[in-house]
Structures are given as C-alpha cells and as structure tokens.
Image (tube, rainbow, N blue to C red; front, side, top):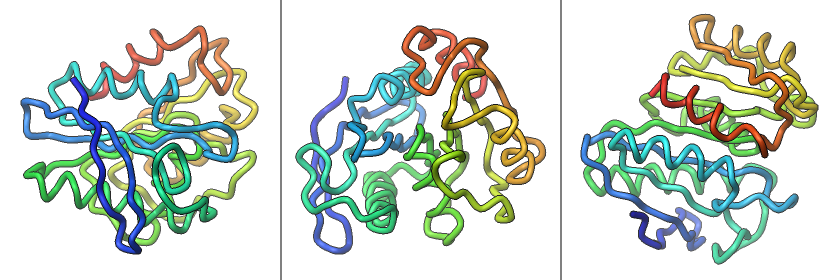
Length: 202
C-alpha cells in the first residue's frame, strides 16, 4: 500500500510523492514522463514499474517533479528536476533505505541520465523504459556502469530500437536490452509484457 507524502528539494520546492514501505531493505525511485505533455506519477507505465518492484518487496517512491500535480515550483528543463530526484534519493536514504535503484520512463530516464552524468546520485542499479532519444539529447559518451536494463517498443518513435540499442551498448555493454514487439511509446496494450520483463530483471 502506498502513502501520500511530501518532501523538500534543496531549493525549497515541496514535492508530493507516493511511498510504499517494503520488506527487503532495498528501494527504488521511479520517475515519470514529461510534465509538459501530461506526464505525472500516476502514469500507467510508472504504475506498472511500481507494482513490479512492490511485489518484489522493495520500498518504492514515485513522485511528481516540480510544477506537476501538487508539487510546487515550475518546470525547469531538467535542471531543477535533477535536484528533485536527488531530494527523493535523500528522502529514502534518511528513512533507512541504503540500497536504492532508479527506474525511469521516457522523460524520467533523461533526468536520471543527466543526474548520473553529473555524479549526483550513487544509485545501486538503473532501469530505463523508453528513453526518448529521438526528441531529447542523451550523452552517449558517459558510461552508466550500474545500468541493468533498457526496454523499448518496436514501434516507439521517440525511443526507436536501433538508436536505443546503440546508446545502451555505449552506456553499459553488459546491460540487457529488450524490445517489446508491437509496442509504441505508451505501452497501452503491452503493460503485462513490460511487467514480465521487469520481473525477470529485478
């Protein structure tokens, strides 16, 4: 069961989130798609990711970036959003969760990649679902050694498989890469297939 919480970013932004306390001592922070295009922590893919981690006994935290939902502030082109992610990480850590993964969907993967590029978060493991590399700039030269899994759909125009496979290989050659045949960026008919892939890698 998830509980509604609030926590603060370093620059005074108040962020709303949903917290589930797990049983394993492991935790995960789940980041949502682009807030300017309707993305928030209630997104169907975000909920799918949260459900899988919860079933695995993880403490889960999904939250709304600044300016989204009841979180204060305004969209900050990924910069303030990195601070929001750091605040979420610190919140879980302060609560006693020492091993924390990051799992992002779409824009949420970009925020994770930027935060890791700037050495802001010592994540245990990273999962990316549909990093939107055809519309947002990802740095292929910065290794992500803790990247474990990258998933996209065969018909995802924002995260086309050939491009994402190339990026994933450069980020971490041993990270697993999965393509869900028939799925587009939104996974509307493919949430169960996505969940099975995630279950096998957590």
